[in-house]
Image (cartoon, rainbow, N blue to C red; front, side, top):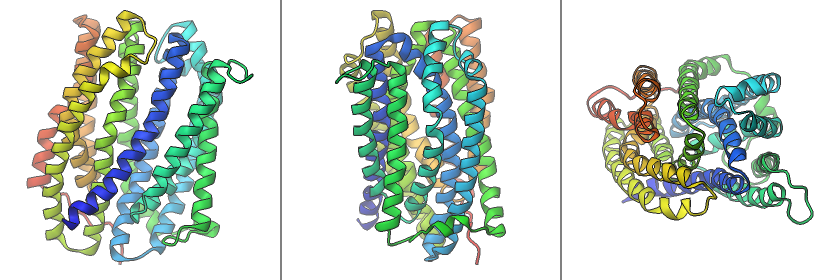
Amino acid sequence: MKFTKRFFSLYIMFVLQNVVTLSVNLTDNMMIGAYSEIALSGVAAINQVQFFYQQILNALSEGVVMISSQYWGTGRIDPIKKIVAIAVKITLGVALLLFTGVSLFPEQVMRIFTTSPEIINQGVDYLMIVRFSYFFLAITMILLASLRSVEIVKIGFQLSIIAFILNICINYTLIFGKFGAPEMGAKGAAVGTLIARIVELLLLLIYLKLRDKTLQSKLRDYLTFDPLLRKDYFRLVVPMVGISGLWGLSTGLQTSILGYMSSEAIAANSVASVLFLLVKGGAVGAASAGAIIIGKEIGTGDLEQVIYYSKRLQKMFFAIGVVGGIVLFFIRIPILGLYDLSPATREMANQFLVILSVIYVGMGYQMPTSEGIIRGGGNPIFIIKMNLISSWLIVIPLSYLLAFYFKASPAVVVFALNSDQLFKCLPVFLKVNYGKWIYKLTRG
């Protein structure tokens, strides 16, 4: 009973935070979709760049959680602060590289996803503003990861609520030109995102300064340098960043495949993907909660308890997958009714969502088990190899052949693009139940 309460206290906060965060994207899409389908396609293309960037940040922040949660299990705080200082410097460097790249080559970035001049123009307009948010997002994600590693999760949810409300208000005002403001369309959505990211970071810094009693971080903590911990962190996150970057790139290529099939396909995929990601928050939250529990238990040294927890978590993850698939199937119709889409685009989005509701059942088990238990146990290499093989040797070649050689329908291609969430269940199940995945990451 204590374990279940502990898991769900973390899980519910993570799910709510993910749902609210992704609701920002959903409302962005809905508002921009109501404004213009061309603007929606342009913003959707740039969001693939954002997705790629967030995968890199996720890898860096999950590295913080993996190591820090084990130190939290030992009751040591000082190494956690040093790991966070290392991660902040790295993420700011990544943000600067991406900012420079998209600033120098904005149209070339857009041409990866579409050849339509109208969509390219809308995407570039959005990108020129939203690129400044990259720096604020980088710091926020690492600082929130440090708090998650010591089981402080409510502040992340509260910040997401504030960002959500703020973003909606600014979007409504600037996209459509309400209350005397200029009608900015896609640019208005970018301004809303940027302001929300700035406010989110400012409030987080205030919380760390005035309210946090666990880490008690100070500015000088982020200026420290520990070569041994840096070595530990680099050894862990370099392969994770590599696979996250490749996975983000593969996702962009998948969107590109659909985008070159038809203009309706890219808009329908944008609508379906955002709703899928919204429900996916359940699986992501389960993975985050599982990683913290497993990491902390490894830190305490009670490996029998770790194995016991891993088996209980798997049962919960499977149930989460089934429930999430059912929810996605039934909410698709009312959500699609909120979009101003052409009949062909609406029907295509509906087909995509039916397929994704089936995919979710497998993903609900596979993702939390691999990302929460196996990677949370200090073993990212297995996940890296599995994702490399599934994405680059199976999913992308198969989808490309179906789309351009066999001329399959967009619905068939979407199933192929997401099929790895089903077939990866088997290797994940075998690894966590019969393989070695527990590794100690802390130093004495």
